[in-house]
Amino acid sequence: MDGAEELIKKARSAVILPHVNADGDALGSCLAMAELLGALGKEAVIYAEEPVGQRLRFMADGIKVYGGETEVYDTCIVLDCGDRERLGERAALADRAGCVLNIDHHKTNTMFGDVNYVDAQASSTGELIAGLYGSLGAEMSAAAAGYLYTAICSDTGCFAYSNTSPKTMRTAAELMEKGIDHAAAARLLFDSVPLETELFKAELTGKIRSYFGGRLRIVSADPASAEKYGLDIEDVSDIVDIPRRICGTEIAASIKDVNGMIRVSLRSNGEADVSEAAQAFGGGGHAKAAGCTVEASDIAEAEEMVVKACGELLR
Ligand SMILES: [Mn+2]
Image 1 (cartoon, rainbow, N blue to C red):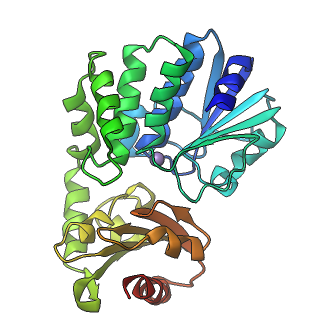
Image 2 (image 1 turned 90 degrees about the horizontal axis):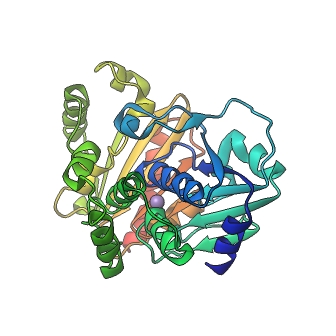
């Protein structure tokens, strides 16, 4: 972490970038990092690849959407992003920056930064940013505490997943002591589902496909199936949780056709390291949660590939 602290202390102008399709951890970490730089008397701007979706709109303030801006920053801080490809068009900002600081917790991180602070034992990037506040001796605002709590809560499924460690809980406790509304954070993340989304998920529940005696369960969705409920397929996330929650599921998969791009999310409830399968398809992630975009012409073809790859993991 030493190199990270040095870089943050030296930064004069900073741009902060989350991964494409930024999730709660990525957005919360970016917002808290901007606050951290602010506490050190520095200016920072956050650029996301695309507008923040409906589900995380409560975190959209302070996040700009990249539109090909050509400013040059001396420091580019990339958060929660396992590889350079997950910067999309914003890789141009990283290329032009004096140096790139890569802070992440994905075990498949490619160490693409000039300085890499990657800790695969951390529950979330938020947990790492909270640690930086401590080691830099920076004053943490209540807003920053809220962002970090939301980030950690998002990646741990509200402290339910196996990535939650005693350190995660101690960090969360310290954030709570800053006076945040932790119940509101959990509610905004997990219990604020629009009715249309719930109805769509109910339909998907009826269409779960089971393989290997239910050890692998898969759901899939395309733009038309979401449109029936007035939903944009891009906005529908976490459908992999539908098969993940069924008893007996060891690996859960979701396959989304996003206008021809076939995106796969994988979750492991057991011993299988699904980042291996994701990596084989050019993606990455964690042992228990990973994702990739597969080279398939349609959902059916992608499903065959997923069944084969996950079948290997279940042997
Ligand atoms: Mn994360």
